[in-house]
Amino acid sequence: TLAETVMGGAFSPQITKTIGNVKDLNEYGLQEPAATVLVTFNDGTTFTYCVGDVSPTDESCYYICEKGSSNVYVAAFDNTSLFEDKVAYIDLTVLSLSTSDTAAPSFEKLSFNGASYDEPFTATKDGDGYTLSSGFAADAEKITEITDALTTLYADSAVAANPGKNTLTKYGFDDPLAVLSFEAGGKQYIMTAGKRDGENIYLMLDGTDVIYQVTETAVSAWLDTDLFALRD
Image 1 (tube, one colour):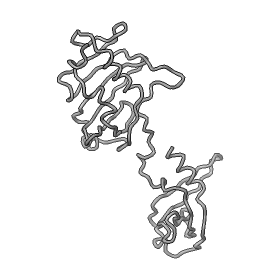
Image 2 (tube, helix red, strand yellow):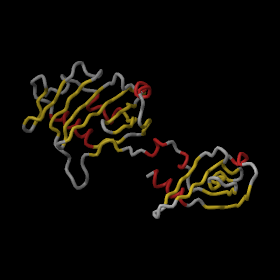
Image 3 (cartoon, helix red, strand yellow):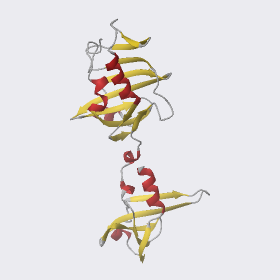
Image 4 (cartoon, helix red, strand yellow):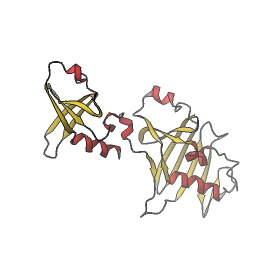
């Protein structure tokens, strides 16, 4: 994962050159560093160092110093993931309701609401099939497409963590395209689709304070349907 990659690089930057004690850390980008790394060891001790400007002679190397020190070094990093925004570290698994050791859970009820639908409606487990809130039987194949899409869902990226009101509005969650509530394996889930952005959809899962970006094809089974389309 990205976090593991960063941890590997953060623990062991390879010192390639010693600059020595300098008078002006600004010359090396260390007065206001690009990154500050706090390493906590198993025994509770810590070590903090700062990463400044890239070396003018080697783009894989950066100036570093211990926090509070003016002793500067040139260090090589295996990667530049250290400088990624915090959302880059978020797991992109939105839903994973089954594993190689466990079967997909049974979906007992699905409730559809939001601007994408002409009216709210439900599909409720009824014996081997599902019955729609209109009283008609649901198309088994289409319901399976929906439950398959909900059993495993991965995002392309995370765009915001712990979003505030303005951020939620920016990505369409003040007037969502869809709110899909469902019960699977005895647990309740709520999936909210914000707005479209080209071929992508902004998405949130209740209980996970993250805004994800997913391709529309990943959610089209339940986003681009309606009560009539699901009739058998």
